Length: 255
Length: 294
Image: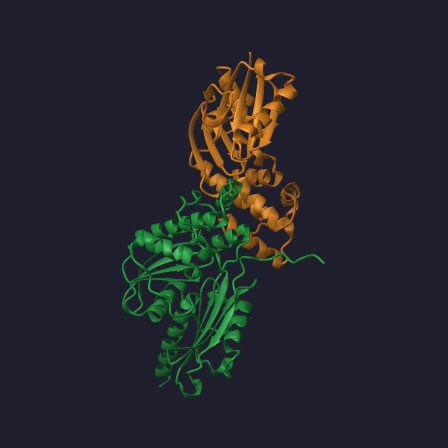
């Protein structure tokens, strides 16, 4: 059976195509003004990789903030449910899922069967989401990937006073003026967002294994801070940004 | 030659000296310096009357920002630092004011300053500063009865407005008036976080919203946010707004609409409240010291 899952997020649309429980295609597109068009673009990418046509897909399930707008979808699943399902499929030992995207951070507690039992969301504030590090990388005038890597060579932990991303930007500017090494600034920024995420996830309880998904899982500086803060090694799967879409594709397949 | 990027958020610095007061005829000369996260004010008072002030941007460190504003306030007078009998520091950087003998919290100073600037009938002061927003209940002497503040989040603060002024490339001095150009009030921007609100506003611009409509939506959101703070502290007339945002008609008018009554019209630069309060405390402390010395 061939199914597809589509995750319509605030920043990007992701599509995963699944054939007999194997991922055969992935596609991603920036969420534009016309969400339907962005969805079609992501679909086209995934179909191309899978070497399939749209008519070959038997069922489509949608997730993400824009899930009700998804074309072709016959079923819907919440982001929390999709994340839990996708993470459990990749690693059945996972009991806690941390999903950090561009504008949202989530902590999900999962059962031994891969169902979401409880969750906490940071949805009102950029301080616990990818937008925070993006803003700080901009303040340092560095590409995000380079900014993230800098944290790994920091030798000193300096506290950030500001929680708010807008105030933190001013604080980073003051640190630059005070000639603080960029490595230490990067670590301070990533420690700050990790602290924020950890205190949110603590509300649902942290149990091993912990899997980190979402686009921010690519940020090595953040992963480093998160591991240090949690005092364990989080599992980062390949293609962490597609886990929600994978969960949706599994839903479409009746899993 | 590369064109310098225009900084729309930059507001004008200023200083002023009273043409009517001769400080040499005065008795107690006191000063207040308010080092905020965004702006720094220095106020010189002669016997409790406003004599000179400066309103400057805060630099990268507090002591220099304080020195800079203090010097600017003295600029058009023949006063020197040693002529000032007592100086009180306040604001975010209050412990780092080199010329101050004492530091007093900005809540107490704002309350006292508002009492002086708007008169003893003021019962509620809303201070909308660069990085925080405070709702303060005061008595007829300008003493604090209770207060609530938000200093964790840029929503409802001057920094938030600066971000929007930059995004829309409209000067910070014009955003308020421009937001009032709309005929029909749009729904307020729904995101609390300024970073998310910026994304939301970009979307609105792409949908073809004119700048004034986007500004109206943001000013309305900001008014709604601070109104919550006011309701929680228990807003009572007379009502006054201090701080930089008090100069933004777009936000002020919308707060007034939500409250159902108007704010007292300002007679002085609204950003001065903290420093005025500090200078008044300084006067009292100078007199107390004189008494102690006999």
